[in-house]
Length: 43
Image 1 (cartoon, one colour):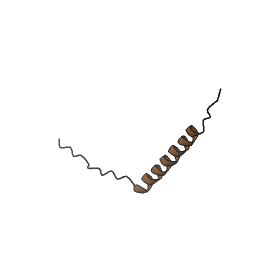
Image 2: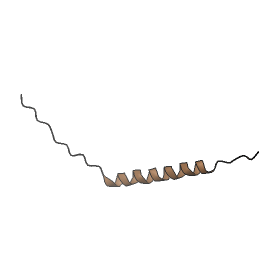
Image 3: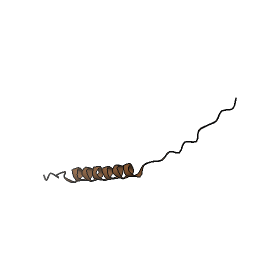
Image 4: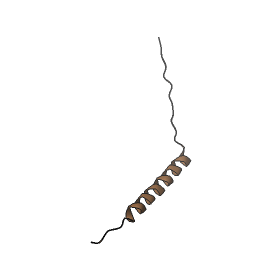
């Protein structure tokens, strides 16, 4: 029995890649702002 495998070319669309990079950048900026606003109590 002769089995042939299909050659699949997986292409990642670049427009969605830029959207993911932009959302990741916004998320990192928001998390850094949340960590920056912590108050230090003075005794």
